Length: 198
Image (cartoon, rainbow, N blue to C red):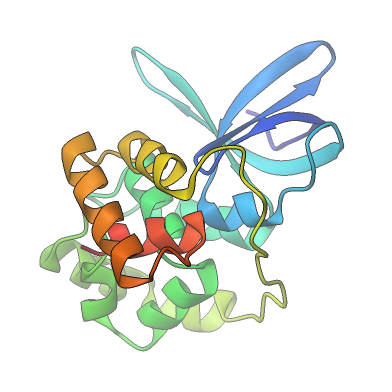
């Protein structure tokens, strides 16, 4: 229904962004990859979008790159993977890393992602490996840079993990363990990615 949205970025967090266009603020769920590519608050932003309609909710998902949206659409066509699980996958690893894991039939890497069991990981590889090899293996050429945060790394990471479906007590425990291991020197994106693999 909505192919893309262009407007002013009024708010962004690691799990969502709000873009205002035509006087309407659109709440858009995003991955860590897209978060890293979004510009500054109060600047123009552009996202490719996908509207997921359920009986009790309409959720808008946004992607900074069309290749990420295409991968997302391929993932949600697989039995056992819904939009939120696909978004967790794209927040646990970059689109390119997921594509490479599929192409190399690396079930173990996919299975390490929260919510992806052995059977689902095998199904992803089986159903997408040929398509990925043919259509998706392209260099992104973009690296997400750490950005300054208005909240602590711990608080921001825990909040994002809870939104992604992790129980708060588990999120807090895992984030604390990661920050201790990294001597507190980790970005929110790094902490979230590691926590999603615990």
